[in-house]
Amino acid sequence: EIVLTQSPGTLSLSPGERATLSCRASQSVSSTYLAWYQQKPGQTPRLVIHGASSRATGIPDRFSGSGSGTDFTLTISRLEPEDFAVYYCQQYGSSPLYSFGQGTKLEIK
Amino acid sequence: EVQLVESGGGLVKPGGSLRLSCTASGFAFTDAWMSWVRQAPGKGLEWVGRIKSKTHGGTTDYPAPVKGRFTISRDDSKNTLYLQMNSLKTEDTALYFCATLANWSLDYWGQGTLVTVSS
Image 1 (cartoon, each protein chain N blue to C red):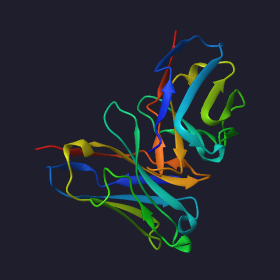
Image 2 (image 1 turned 90 degrees about the vertical axis):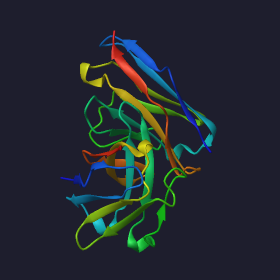
Image 3 (image 1 turned 180 degrees about the vertical axis):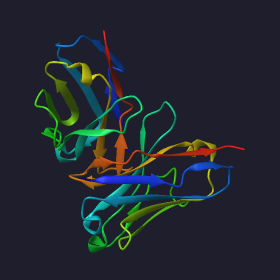
């Protein structure tokens, strides 16, 4: 079973700063099968990145994804007030077929 | 515009059953692979199962915690996805989302329906 571990648990930053969120897998994950989601309080999760580095429809270019193997990163280059949320990484392919990390809460400092 | 609307949630006793529905519009439901994901109160996301399009066999997959208790089905004539949940446990209490699958990720999500399992 693949376990995704996200760090840090909580990240406190100010608008305009750069955010770097990490997702580490217990086994190698194909880049094709790694995604990131944003979830604001009381809202539905929203796909941000698929295929490790491809932005989903409507996602601004300040969001970027990178990584391979067991280490993946979501970067937000200049934080906007609407970016503060919980972010989850997700993998496809190994038992269970889909699994999520525990989430990183990005909060305003 | 893609819309997914879940319904059927509610309060059920442990050991009971419930069937959730997800009505889809704004895309070719017949061709879509669909999934259910749940989120316990204050917790993270947990994948509950997947159904392929009938073109790809219409087969289903489930994670261990729900396998044998939950069944996903679809009625393409009604653009509706179902989740039949049997032998419910208190740990199944969660907000249940349906979502479309594309590029090995979940690209459109409904607003969710709340299931509470309690005596």
